[in-house]
Length: 128
Image (cartoon, rainbow, N blue to C red):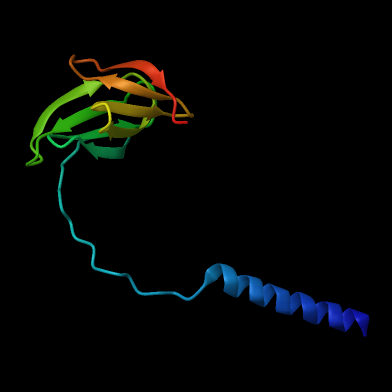
């Protein structure tokens, strides 16, 4: 009898847990809309895009040997490419200081300098 009660309790517990974690499937709130379209020719894969209020920036990651940052104007027309030389995974714009930053594979985040053909990472910043 104890075994039957234990099995029933376990089954009820599983059903309650599954219901609590999965929840009810809801329809999407709205329809997705394509706002911009950028043709970004990359060797490995696009990993991130950001906007600084003037231009769009994409970072193409995959490894240290081929990490390119591409810059586009508001109309999504290509401006320039910069080789980065680190395995960049995320690019973002910090409106507090007006800087572009890149997170490399791992946990480090660096400020970017795109004023040259080869982009450089400067000081590592803390996210805490």
